[in-house]
Length: 174
Image 1: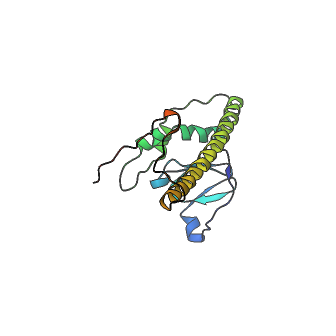
Image 2: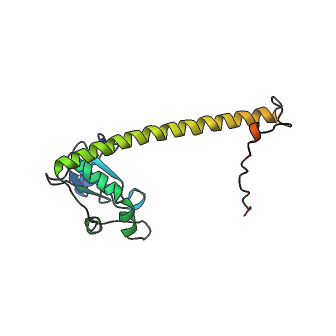
Image 3: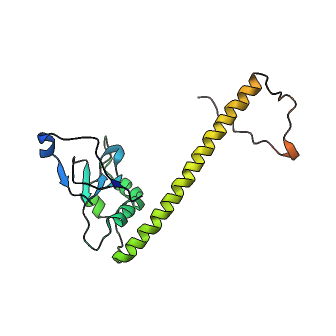
């Protein structure tokens, strides 16, 4: 989770730079408008950002990666405090109003290491789940195809060992 944002896919001309905010490497960025509200990234290089992004450059007693996890944990609260108009948006005051506890910097580093390990584990589990779902979908398609084309005969099929079939609920057509 502590991956740094290492490159940008856009460049700015002089006018773009004039209306953008410059942030140094190590800044925690947060989207505050629209679909990207509450999304975070840590800059691995100096960059300019539009006003739909705010930057946090924490004090020396705050680990920037810990702060990112804190914001991720507070995302539901942040979203619920967002102004709801054509596009939801946050501002610094709303973000700053979220209560937070900051343990000693060494403890923050340990918490970040632990959360990084958990995040990597969950990413591997999610990848395995996605892989399994894809495989099951492929096998389902192959089984249906084989049954429809007569390659297998399912007319007298019975579940093994007295198993019960789970019937999906029938949804009304609307």
